Length: 408
Image 1 (spheres, rainbow, N blue to C red):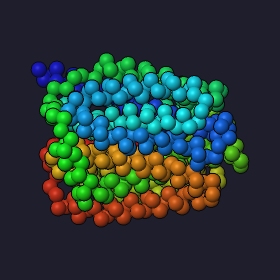
Image 2 (tube, one colour):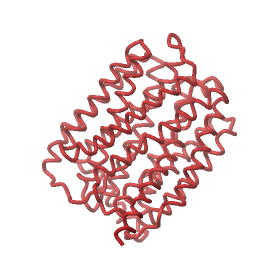
Image 3 (tube, rainbow, N blue to C red):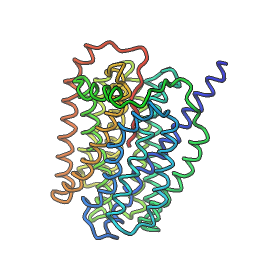
């Protein structure tokens, strides 16, 4: 029996890692080919960034409704249906020639992938029993970085040879393979206790999470940190391919290999947070991200890429810790809704930050944009310092489902 349980847990982890890979590959499919979109449609960087922001905005809007519905209809059903819809839209996108329609479809696609992003943490906590939770969630977030990196890398290289449509199509093929594996591997729930479809009691937890002052610091870290992260990666392609760097697009796409740093730091940060406390490790992650942002001010390509690795590693370390902090600080009766609220902050910040970063870059260049993003990271650090008292006031529960999000 014990062997069967261990095999089932291993199967769940593999399935969710594959699902996360598909989720983040599809969610950010347009990002590595934004310069090609800009050329094809004759649009400025801030405008084409809407293709990324629309997806993350859809996820932010749909996270709470789908997370709540999973309590009624089952977590596996919501996750599988969501990923199938997102993949179907991914296959359709390369054939669309209207930019407004592309933005609209991306909004729907983002809402679809919310079914995994908002539900996976609760499913994992229910079905694994919370065993080694900090380490498990750190490894899960590390897996999401693989999806973000592989999708962007594949799309960027394919896009250099086949235009934006070829880049997006290549990511759709990757997503299709992962979707099949996810559907085949993910087991039915055994431990979820479903609720009746009564919105009022289900939304009580949403209100509790939204008004809990102890949760504001990790929510602010999610919004401000992710906004800065997406802004950097949205604009980076433009900076690399434009003079004076003039890097070929296929080679510029290799910059997304920096995501590998997040794979390492998110797993390490999860373990360190269990040992040293979340606020301390979270501040270290934000400080590392700020250091990377400062390094990228250099005009030397090597220093820029080193700064990108440092920035990426710091951000994912902070995200891994902040997501777990939500589960520990939230009221036991509102952990699922707090998880969804974190998603709202995370991807809402991504949507706003992606557009703001593009506009700032067009107006003030890379240095001006970096100043805006640096202020965001500093504000996130201040929020963490203010939240240390909340953590001291609350005893950590024995089992606490952490928040999962990617990215990515």
